Amino acid sequence: MLTPPVTAVAPAGHGASSPTSATHATCEEILRVLLPYRRTLDDPHGDTPDAFPLQVRQLSHWVAAGRPILFTLPGFPCKSPNPAKVLGPLPDEGERLALRFLDRLCARITAVYPPGARMLICSDGHVFSDLIRVPDATIDAYADGLRALIGDEGLAARLDVFDLRAAYGDLTYDEKRARIEAAHGPTLEMLRAEARADETARRLYQGITRFLFEDTDFRAYPGTRSALQRECRARAYGVIRRSRAWGELIADHHPGAVRLSIHPQPRGSAKFGIRLLAAPDVWMTPWHACVLEHADGRRELLRRADAERLGRPVLRHGRPSHFAAPADPATG
Image (cartoon, rainbow, N blue to C red; front, side):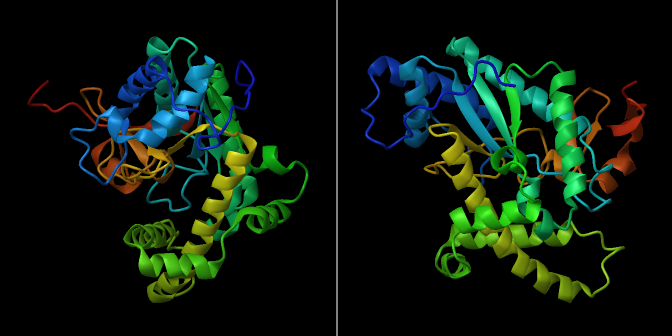
């Protein structure tokens, strides 16, 4: 578990006063640690802390109280069901490197803010299980593997996992999904209206539709590709609805936490997009790809089909972990 235990602070915008100059300066130092890893569709060059007043405000509640900062990061749901993307259903080198990166990020924050920081990974696979067509038992195995990896890597002092099991206890997963939608989900009509009126909302809807299509195991899908496209467009609204609901539930359980995102976020968003590992696609994550280790030690995320062409498989604890590219004969 995270140490020390989480203590709620007043959420941003709920009557808190403006940060003092010392608090503000510390918050800017923390943002300078985060900015090199910002995941965005904008041009990140020239990013400065003063371009992120919402994050300064979120951080200030922890800094002013002198408490460890709590970051919440929805993601790490399960591996893609498409075998052309990933090595299998369990966490592998991609998750291991991403978790170690998040731990190092917290350590770097501690260097400029001694009370430190903690990262709560809000594993959301069960939120979307029926929509992404991954069985709940498979998601349980992935989340349990994630927790085991955190322990094995010695990261439990700064990292922990929160999921629907922690939120709703012994209810069935179908009951949990129904409850989160009823309590926190926007209506389908609202989402459709947003997608028609707002370019950012429309791009999100289109991106999720593409993800659902590409995550399909085409060998097992019985219909045509055009039928799958129609189905994915319908499911995309469900994913957006559940995502919104999950964000609200996280905020209720962890008030005042600084909200990170594994998706690109524009300046001015209440969520700060964070890039976990190097990848050719700004949307790519460890659970939609696998790791290729280059001969010079550099690691990047690639689709399995691409990594497989460039490297040989590497095992860790008897299971496929990643791919390693051979040395270039011209360079030795």
